Length: 81
Image (cartoon, rainbow, N blue to C red; front, side, top):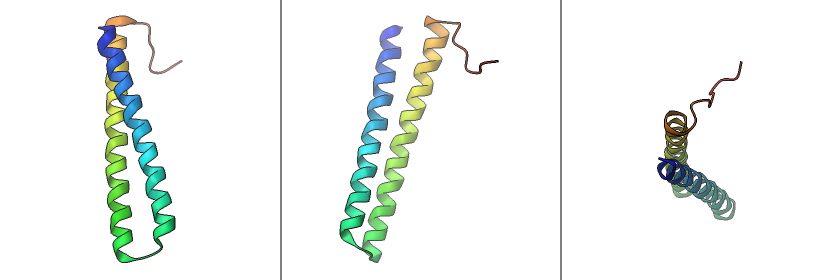
């Protein structure tokens, strides 16, 4: 089960890092492109796609933590008292 947990965690980390690079790329292109209606559409679409990738990465992270808590270490606490 640890292979599944590690694989899911690595996938989540990869997706979050990829989305962060994409956001940086979008911002850099926006600064160089200037202001236009077409540029606004491209930027909006890019941020929506990056947000989608972030959300998938977060879901994979939650799955990895859930699998770890269920099968590896049942003392993992989501909320500390």
